[in-house]
Length: 312
Image 1 (cartoon, rainbow, N blue to C red):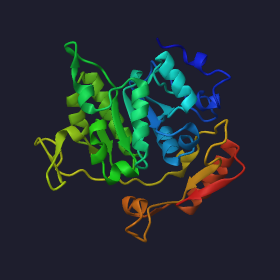
Image 2: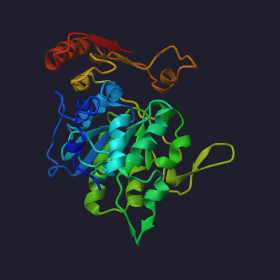
Image 3: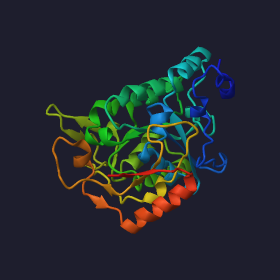
Image 4: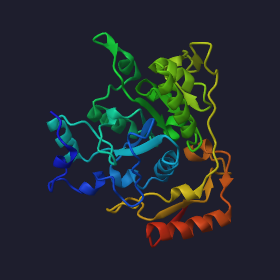
């Protein structure tokens, strides 16, 4: 039987600040005022996820959207994971302390291949079926309401097929413009009372959204639609970097990148074939120097960090 989250965060838990969700810069939007409720879910422990710039940028952007809220979740360390399993308490989002199953949509950052097993562990801890096929099956004559599960990031963009069974859809490319568009479709779909499949069909019309259930793989490895009302080819989304959204969280504990990070370029002009980010983030987009300087000055004052790094 599940227990209250605060009863699990006791003195025997290492670094409980990982799970408090009240850092400087954390956003707490009213639950009842939101129509669409997101969780950005990073499949690593807090020290890695909370310092990931893409995670911070998307969190900031989604929490500026009207009628939406965005919470966060991370892979719990082994000590808390053992407590969650022993008490049958589902994995929770850190700001609201609500189970992940309370939300409409869970977005996982799949930045590298080994993160895939962490995603499965998080879904298991949350009590969510692992595959989209299981989440779509009726139980006791009715279809259970599960959050939509999707992935984004470099590994998901480069080759989503090894992970296609685990996600309802996959976001290809940059998410700054894509995720707000997804949120608007979800809002309309909820208002219209659409079924899960009908909602995913609407999402499949957004450039950059790949819905695996609507595509089949041929013997040669190519992927083709299995219905006529979805795009033949899904295009990778490209967005302009906006440094202002990088002024996000200031954790209570030391993280992997414990400083202000400001993006000055996305993409690379060298085109090295062995470099996955260089191939996937084309074209190269430079941030205007004045915007970089403003982001550094504002970010240092806003966060209290005493050092910054420039990200290419």
